[in-house]
Length: 303
Image 1 (cartoon, helix red, strand yellow):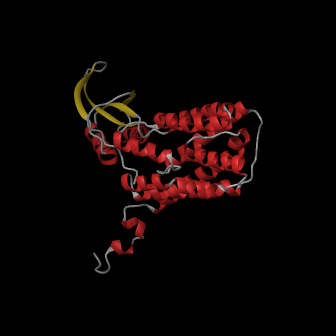
Image 2 (cartoon, rainbow, N blue to C red):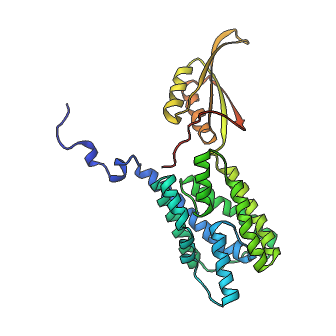
Image 3 (cartoon, helix red, strand yellow):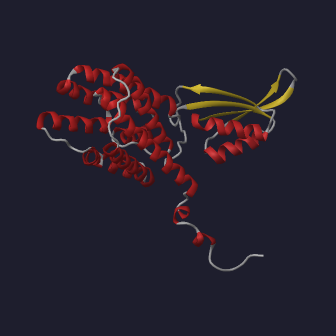
């Protein structure tokens, strides 16, 4: 029996009214917090130990800091410079991506800046090559954690996401070449050895992000099952991707078989495969890496 009274939605938390899960927001906050702490520790261990410039606006901030110290004798804090540089990318993200994406990116920028000023320098090794490789890997892990939390570390990362969202392409390699321009300036001011080592650092970081960020990678699924329509309903309802149904004959047993053909984002493959096995334990799934597609493809929004 239904009770009359206050509508259920009035008892919801404000975030839930906007379609946002409290658990999901807590997870995003944790990922962004961890990413900011990891990135700041990386700056104070590997980056500063090797005198590197990590690229992006963090690298530009370090370039301004070191230039002010060398040529003006002024020791500038990291936070105000980094926050000022990120004003334009933040406005761009807010207008073109979404408010929650931008707010979490702002949180990432602020936490990274504050942690970098608070954490003391902690050099782990004097070997510059080791600093480049492992510092780049840690930097890429921090950026990937942030992207997993549907945010960015600000600066050129926001620009990369905007390009990716608008054009549907993986923009990280383009950002890598843009970062090389910052390194060229650093080379002119502080010596080409540090700038060239920084290219190795940035390349290692880009490779890690490119490997771990599956959002712009595509996978083609061939699913053979006697419960094809149920499987398609799951794909449609959870990923909003379309599919094509083929009717055929399994030549081994000479029995009728249905096959679903669908292209999905690579980060959706595991959940789809798990659901397929639950719907039909005897289903056969073939997942193939897709290099290029032309036509309509649904890309899940970040907010």
